Length: 455
Image (cartoon, rainbow, N blue to C red):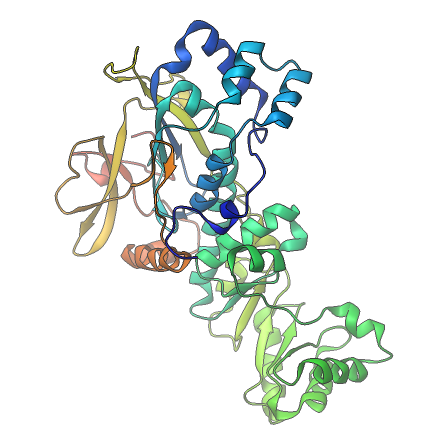
């Protein structure tokens, strides 16, 4: 994916995203059109109040897909007919929607960026009508992809340089599987089993065989010989259909010393790997790699440090966010003007844990001796504090998507931002958020004692 104002998905002519929303977005719009507030200039911020319990960092993903969703947010005849049939909005609002296209501006954290509680991952500046229609679809895309990327990044850290393959297509919705594959590869997985993700996003696809291939043959040696006849010795043989040691012996007999890899999909991964490595070496297959799969997550992968495992295949845990299937993003109105050209006024919701902080905010990352120590919120339009790095970048101007970085650039951005974190952030055991979010001039040690707090 090269720098461009449109992604391959958008260029292909995606279907309308207008009904990928909640009914109340349209009923609010209907009422706002009737009373005139539909045109009030507004600022919405999309952010999370806290990270999942025990997580030290999270990673933004899905921005490219979100921009495509905005571009496809059109109320064509079919969509309007559905709204009319179900009496969702009045006739005048149907006419307003017929001409709808997003005409505002948006800023966001780049894909692959570390995201802290209360830092706007996306900021939308537009009329109330333009902005409110995007709430559900933006939250749907960014909550899912960020959850997957955050879990996948932790797995990459735990793997300690060993490759990871994304194998989770069968554990989630078919379209979610495509997005999950992209998010996982964004943060360091080397490829996916999902062919549609490979086609749509140019990702490397991987995979050879499952237990069914072994079972359809009369015996294991016959199955292994058939696979090697079709794919050559640079393939991976699944050796745990019956007995793992015997499966390894049969794999070596079929593939010889040039057999690329074996895969084990059961048992204790570290223990199985030690036994497998000893047997492979005994049989003379010193270069045959060991791939482990089977209900792995970042904690089980982390427990395999020092084990002779060459690669990991991860399924359920990565596509479901490893126990945190949403990033917890919300989309809140933080400023509005009473009329076009009027001064923006902060607005906020009161009420316990769901209270918000009003006002249009920017964020910058503060460093000490080259290490990130906090994310600082400051008023929009004011220069960031000295020695800090601004976090948001413009992504839409006057309704038009701005040129986007390539996928490879976003991958590198994640590696660079991960390297900025303190070493303790890369521990996958439960801990507190690595980068507290503070207001300008606030001491980082005084904020966020756990995994998030309203600054």
